[in-house]
Image (tube, rainbow, N blue to C red; front, side, top):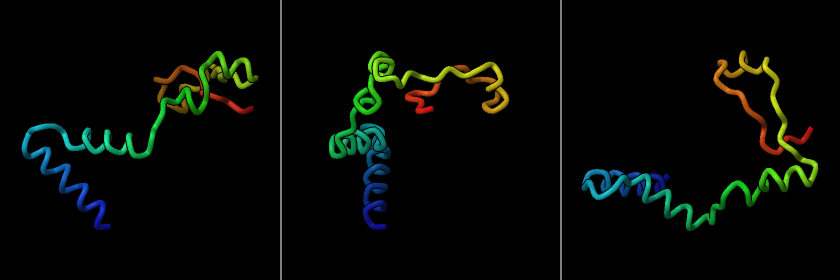
Length: 80
């Protein structure tokens, strides 16, 4: 893909000059072009999810075997 090649060349040139990391510059440009927003815009705040009956799902203690034991938390916007 020629677009990918051009973006890669721009990123590598910026890295070479030492001005900044090319990936950060390209990510900022993409953020502006794609109009990315915070997750709260898409899934709502925890309070909004509770009010709409879509509260976060709490995981039990037996989840550790699925995730290597390092994850204890909840699923954002659970639908079950």
